[in-house]
Length: 196
Image (cartoon, rainbow, N blue to C red; front, side):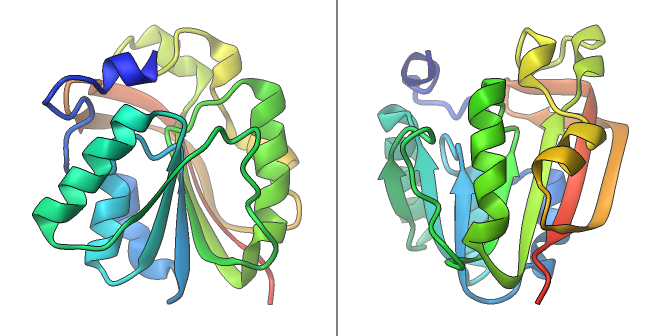
């Protein structure tokens, strides 16, 4: 599905970074940064432009080719890893920051990835996450077609134990990202830190 979606020349979600990420990227300490389910690279390229060493992981080879193209066009370095998150080892105390923007995974895989994040962050490292909540189904402006693929504040607290939430909120906001996300969205936003 994703290779097909990313096969067009245009960027399905645009080339500008996610608004929540752009507003809060400065909270991430210096060091290596991992972007989960990064797709066509808009967020990873933005972060690389801020001086971070960014690894973008995605299961879509077509998406990562476009991420590499965008990085070249912007004159930044980006490491792209073609992998299924079910098989990708996030490592231990490896990342200064982990970014998860609309990374909607099947619940068992989401719980597996979220359980690995606290261990994968360095002490003091930051997770930045934005995802659609089940209320998004009433809007129809993007995101998965079923509630089980979405997240809410309660599930994030449960799945990301070991992190301290500095911000965790459900809200509605205008999400305009290419043709993939267009209009009012019901989202959950999280900024969480691994204690030092």
